[in-house]
Length: 126
Image (cartoon, rainbow, N blue to C red; front, top):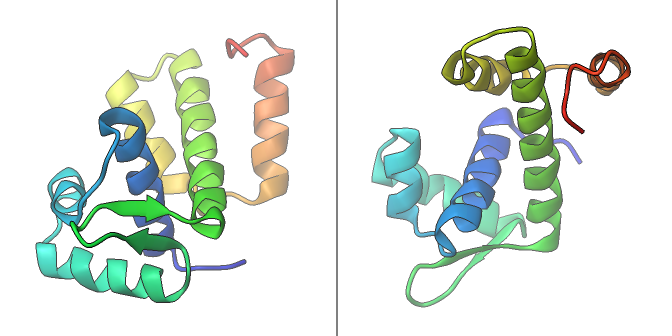
């Protein structure tokens, strides 16, 4: 299931916002990501048409199972990479920013080996 990195970013942000706020609307995504409302509207339309999200009549967004699966995978990678970078002594804000930059591009093999290495060296609190 390969989708564009930007779509993965939107799905991840929906998951993060829903965990934090309980409900998510397009304006919340626009504000959080620093993008325009029209850009979010186009992205939400594409995600809805692909079956990744649904939107109720009040504009609240829900992740559908395929979208939730992608969001959870990306967000999980983000959290583990952030934790690893912090264990190396990287500032938390920088660690999160850097994790966001590589969470999509790191191969599954490299990601798993990196996390296994960190955990075997007790670098991460898992």
